[in-house]
Length: 480
Picture 1 (cartoon, rainbow, N blue to C red):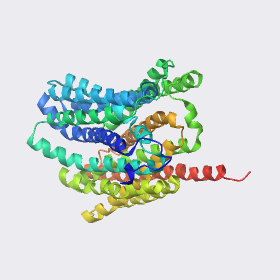
Picture 2: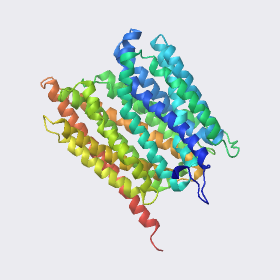
Picture 3: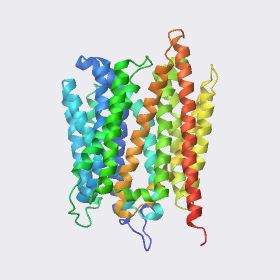
Picture 4: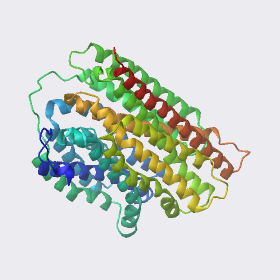
């Protein structure tokens, strides 16, 4: 297999060691995706088991997201000081042990606390996973391995709800966390063997002020988004609006102070020089806009399938499967093409297909046939699969190799916040369309259509950012 064959002049690890490192990274990636998907499905059972309200149980999910988001930038900086292997192993160990703690929790407070720790461990591993793949594999294979990684995420996303639902029907919710323990042990053995350690000592002081400001900024954004996304289609109350505005202001102030601090710091948490590369910055903006779009669609479609069309939760899950299936079909080939041709062109084509799919979903008839829904969802998945791995390759390959950890952290941050902002936007639209004079089905149908059109608009913005890279490339190659 070409992924594990070596050629003269290859950077990275020898072929066999690549396989072990790839297995470690992809095992952890699968654990993270599976954990995030099945916990949401298990929330009703968790609420009943712990005798708490569904609203309180939501923090089992939000706590993980909050702690992960607040620490992404911190771990991207620590990677340069600790090395990939040490940071990955520490994060994996924390994630695995806190998974066991989740399974043993007998109260909501204990479970939420363990989920907070689990989010920190997950952030430590997932924030540097793409950077590890770049370090392990030669540059000529970077697009291909990122395509396989995208395939794995899509396949896990598709399988997780079905497998999780099957487990919950036969076992208690605690087993959803227990399964991480043996997988974590296997990944730890592989990681300690194959993932490279620190190549040279980095003894520069750590930017603690920048770390605190980044955590406050990212945490404030998550909390502001969560305040809107939990409205459940009800009108936004004054207290909810006040809380969201307060969190947003805190995030804005902390963000301004963070940027000022990074410009002045001798050893910044996040070197702003990586954004001097226009292609890197445009790829990051492209990723942010596309994940906003995907986040909106992932929240809107269940409302369309269940509340408007009247399908069951299981049937809705089946209708959703074509999206990740499209990514599985296309992502490896898109990654392979990105190693030979311009990733910006390939990702731009993918975004155009994605936008067409979203417009077709927004134009679904009132009584759509299942095959029609499947075809339009599949088109979205094909477009997103064509976009994702080439765009990730563009981000990682347009920074110096020693800054791979920072680039990987930025990639994780824009993905996380794109999805969170997309969820928040749907919450705002659901609240804005909640009118007493309208029937509930009509309200939700209107909200879904508006959300899908807004997602299509966000994708058009992503296309604009993506095409701008082509003009930037033309300028770079223009004869002087």
